[in-house]
Amino acid sequence: MIIRFDETMEGLIAFQRHHYATSPSQQKSRRTQSILFPAILFTVFTVSAVLQESPLMFIVGAAAALMIFFSMRGKIDAMHLDAVEKQTREMFSEGENKVVFGPRELEVTPEFLVKRSPVHEFIVRWSAVERIVETLDYGYIYWCGVAAHQIPKKQVSKDEYRAFMEAAKSAWEAAKATKSQTAASSLPLPPDS
Image (tube, rainbow, N blue to C red; front, side, top):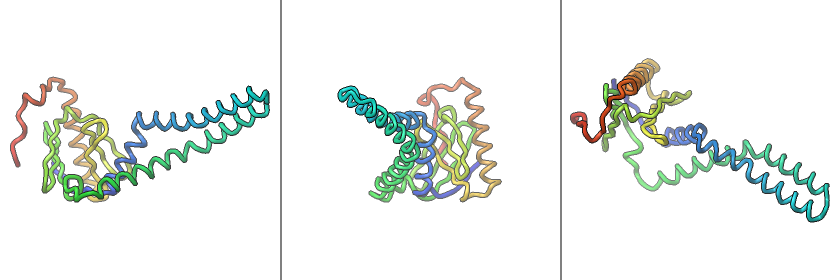
């Protein structure tokens, strides 16, 4: 089963945003950041209250820390998402990036997921695929914890997309079920197309 589409900057940014929103390490980082500054502020006011023997300073500090905690939660996410988009655009403006953007074809075979472009071919065994995720606009086939092949739904028909994702999930499930996969270095690569 083969599907064809174009990889674009918008698709890359959509993936970066999706990964940022769903990554356990990113979620932990956001929680830490949303708690850290209010905690520091509360500590400063508490120390000031103790040194000045002023319960009012403690109350002001607690109120300020709580206000900042609740007001920053959504803002931290928005700031990070803006930064992710800006950094991605800046990084990829430094060249043509033909390996990253342009026409693509993804092929599902029983043993491999093959991605081709006019300038490269990327082959991964289904046993190495970590997860397959679908969002409103994209399908993602993660070939490692932080990178995925992206299938933009708007560039292919619903039937073509659904058939491709079903074939991908079937091949992936079969690879997970056969647990008898050997080391990649001991198996031959698929023949050139």
